[in-house]
Amino acid sequence: MRLTFIIIFCSISVLSSQLVSCLSLNPASTVVKHRTAFDADAEGFWQRQSTWKSRWVKYWRPKITYVPVWKKVWGPVIQNEWMPLPNILPELNEANHSQT
Image (tube, rainbow, N blue to C red; front, side, top):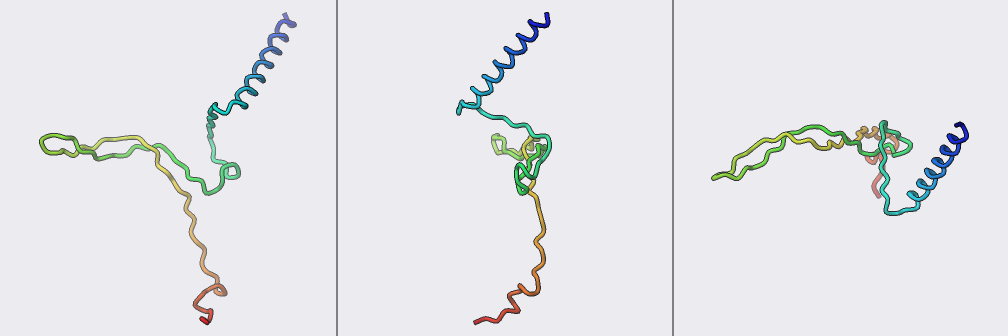
C-alpha cells in the first residue's frame, strides 16, 4: 500500500514538473497574477491602483425626442498616488540669482 502511494506521488510530481516546464516554454500561454496586497518593491511605488465601484451614467434613449436616462454601472476607478511637492530651498530660489 505504501509503495503504491509513493509511486503514484512520484509520477504526479514528475508530470506536474513537466507541465510547468511546458507552460513556461510556450509563448502563447497567458500568465494570470492575482495580488491581494500592494508590494511597493515589486511593482513600483508610483503605480496606479484601481478599484471597482458603481457610478451613474447618463445616456439618451431614442424616442420621438431623446429622453435622458440614468443607469447605474460598475467600472474601475483609478486612484493615483498623490504626494505634495516640497518647498523650494532658499539657496535654490531663482529670484535671488542675478540675470546675465
